[in-house]
Image 1 (cartoon, rainbow, N blue to C red):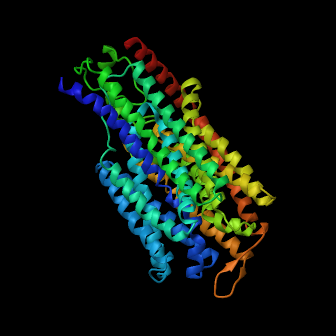
Image 2 (image 1 turned 90 degrees about the horizontal axis):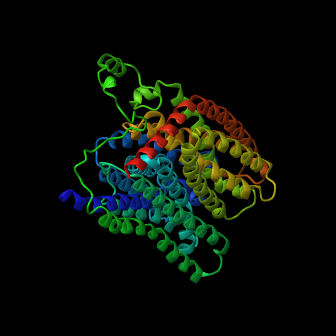
Image 3 (image 1 turned 45 degrees about the vertical axis):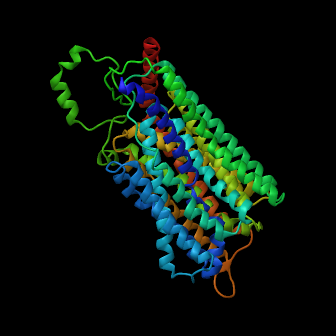
Length: 545
């Protein structure tokens, strides 16, 4: 009976771990905040736009070393992965703070690249620890898990930006100090609670429904945080007192998800007191036979042949088996077209805003972040709903986001009044959809066993996309249009500065759209099986309950 006493606390611990994961994600989007302090680096180091863009590329190149996090996550506990990431961030952003605050002289360019790379790599350890652990803990709700966690990553930019404005009037020096110490402190907390929890020996329809209800509460709380941040963007100039009250209110809202593990503890304690713990633990793959007949068990020859063949889509793949498939590379390249172009906009938003006559670009940074949240959280929930109801392939959602993103880039290329506001919203939504949908898609296509490494190979698109679209495309074309200024560096004012950049990125999104449609067609049968499997499990759960 001892295990009975542990189950309520174990259930609550799983949800407490998810809350700590939400907090880690809420502070791990610091890579997207480069525009908030890039102008300070540019002026202090007398950089051209190409040199500044290559600094942002160095930051994103840090994600390429996320492969190390992917390998480590299958060999080390979650707390160790979080510790490595938090220490890297402390060092990487800490040195940038020392430079921007002028506590030390600007470092040589190559050294700054190293520290930006270190700060960029820190988030890959945090994201890997959080995503792999939570998707394994909540295997039946991969869409909502991905949407909520990736949603808070999107919000983190707005959280940091708005807190910095409220407390420090957008001063880049204390902003970088926050980027160094806040993630470090949050990760130290999460180290104690975020861990992989073995699945229960059996589940009922009531258990499944309860889990879905809890995720609905998380979604609702996240939407409240997003709307709260959006409202502050319109009243942020209302005075010091309002700003301070906003900060306290935001911290309260970020702490509100704690109600879920607290409620779960008391509910589980009461409802599970009499439940037997004699059932054997069952590991359920995503696609499996619900009933195994004796005739199937006797087909030893067939089983031997099955073990020798290469896995098909929907089964567990090693990393080498995954990269041999066409589906992996279609997903990889389409992901590049979406996130690579979106990242270029975020990295260059400071200069894009200045070119179009906006002295303060924090509004656009915040808009991309907040609407990116809505894209992530809605796409995760809606894609899961339509998968269960109609077997809709998740890549179709990526295809829709690519077309909408194309419209956003064309609008920004036109440089009409207000087009940057509309474009920022569209790019934020579509970038969020792309990140949120790709996470569960990769796990459904290639399995969870080596998911950490597969996920980090896909994330290589961030540094590759940053280099291609931000470092090369945007950097070279901007410098071609820019005028040199005294003391070094250059500047460009007008809609022509980034027009060709936006049009090229729109073309890339059209290519991504075609690839996503192809992938949706190739995986249609898989998602039909997933739909049927989920319905079968639901029927069995109803019979058991």
